[in-house]
Amino acid sequence: MFQLNDIPDLKGKTVMVTGATAGLGKASCTEFARKGAHVIVLGRNAEKCAQVIEEIKQKTGSELVEFYLQDLDDLESVRAFCKSFLARANTRLDILMLNAGFTRGSYALTKQGIESSFGVNYVAHFYMVYLLESLILACKTRIVSVSAGMINPERVNDTLEEMNNKATFDGLVAYGRSKAANIIFAKAMARKYADAGVISSVIEPGAVATDGPANLDIKVDLSFHGVVAFWCRYALPYFGASISDGIRPQMFAAVSPHVVNGVAYSHNCKKWNKANNFSTIELEEQLWTHTLELLAEKHMLKQ
Ligand SMILES: NC(=O)c1ccc[n+]([C@@H]2O[C@H](COP(=O)([O-])OP(=O)(O)OC[C@H]3O[C@@H](n4cnc5c(N)ncnc54)[C@H](OP(=O)(O)O)[C@@H]3O)[C@@H](O)[C@H]2O)c1
Image 1 (cartoon, rainbow, N blue to C red):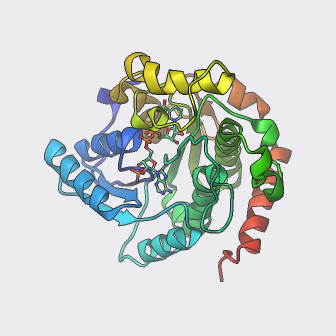
Image 2: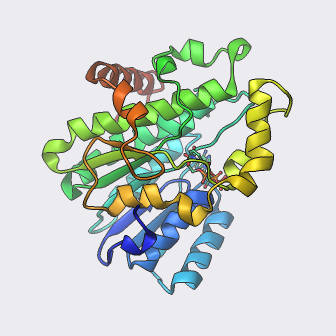
């Protein structure tokens, strides 16, 4: 299996990671910095971002680490970040890791009124790529999407009204919908951007002992959801993979010459059959169109 020692020298490469202030994203940024990449940490909290870049600089000795603020809960914030990044002199982007994500039991909407798991984990990442597309194509950016084993592909084309229905809301279904959307989107990018030389793949990290699952706000009881909550909160910190092992699939997807465009990889860096089998071009096109329509409805399309 791919090891962190297999990461090649990354001097001269610019790498951007969403959800870089904790867990898998922060650890990935640390490894990128260790190998000499120019690392762009993306986060929503300035104080936390500043602490994280200091920590990475100290651990790796690299000064090539900076942060930008971007709250994926707010598409205006994504737009402001992308605009400022594109305006940088000689800007480039060699690796884009779409890593941010959360599992939540409670109901919430994003600033633009989209069910928050779908809005943050998927729509905001789609929006970033949509806005950075010219740079991605020019730089042949390698794109890594971070999904999860718990996926609900059959719910991906739910309407906004269905997703936003508080009465029928189920946090795990919403999470699984957003994570299935990550897979379909990664495969759609692979097909649409292949001629430009972009490589897009998607991974699932397995069960990793980060704070993300441990913070799942679902009551522990004997229901399926309660048992999942118990596992995430009490078992994962002991039985989950360490964070340094947990980042291997996303680091593999980011740098390995063996990665195949459009393929989904499991936590062992082997092909992830479940994800590779359900996605179709029809599903990819439906989701792409649906997402652009959603952005249009929210007045977020490019001017
Ligand atoms: N850990 C696992 O076992 C596991 C399993 C399957 C999939 N995954 C996936 O792996 C990815 C990383 O998860 P993790 O375990 O490392 O979780 P984590 O430790 O909770 O880190 C999540 C990151 O996402 C950021 N984030 C959340 N909401 C955001 C928003 N609105 N705007 C910007 N950033 C936001 C967080 O920022 P703050 O620091 O500001 O909160 C944090 O940096 C996620 O996509 C998750 O679904 C993890």
